[in-house]
Length: 153
Image (cartoon, helix red, strand yellow):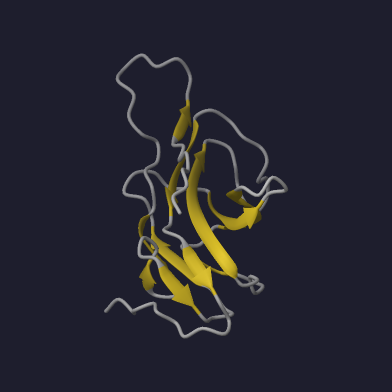
């Protein structure tokens, strides 16, 4: 099955007077349990550990992990729906709960903001602000299956 995801990289600034350059780029080398986030796998794991290197441009005030689960809507159409969102100031995150068996896609968003402090004022934003996203390959979580994820050395 093929599905389309619109990945947005956005930037909001005052009216520019010079060429616009990115405030933040996507995270680098994202992994799930030590394997590439871009390599499809079947996982028999209850703890999902995500990690990544910071963006090459920008210093994010926070990172957001978005989870999308493959579901069937009432009309019988298969689509990915929001299955959870988590945030951190670190370059790694372990999901605090087990996902039910199913197929999932994960997005990691790096966000920069001139005013936000994730720990003291996470919802106070000021221009300039930007975010950049990477999206994973589909992963099958099956607690009864053998893991097919190969560790990256």
